Image (cartoon, rainbow, N blue to C red; front, top):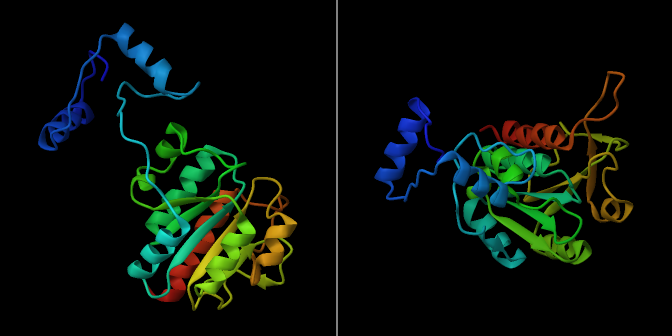
Length: 224
């Protein structure tokens, strides 16, 4: 924490750190600026407080699926097909956790990292929702199907709508990358493709917004 911070939020941080036995260190502004430069990416604003934490646990696909079925008889997973913006990754993680999804699957390559930007955008959700990284999407899709999951991809040219009754089973919602959407090879592995109808002049939504709409439609259909 930077020296000189005041206010209710600062007092709450002091109180919670003491209660949780988390060591809290106050740096002078010069030393804090050096730390901020070391651990924060460019243009990332710490607002005077930085939490240093252990690396995130990355689940294997097998462990993620097992944990998903322990959570729900009809679990929901979210697969991100080359999402490159860490803010989108964080926002999707937030929607996934808030809607009760059981986990997120990312490709090991061509994916936004779990960075400070993603963590901040997730509002803490990345602390709670399991994340799995996989080297091969085709093998991952086959494994999910073999374990009872229905793969549902989002695509602007789909014939079916996101409000259709397609979620009454374990499902993995596949979200495409910003601008490009789902890759053709990913579409071919999906059991169902769904779309969100557009009536404006702009014909696409941000990937995180699309994910949130679909995830909370699942919540609605489940009657939660």
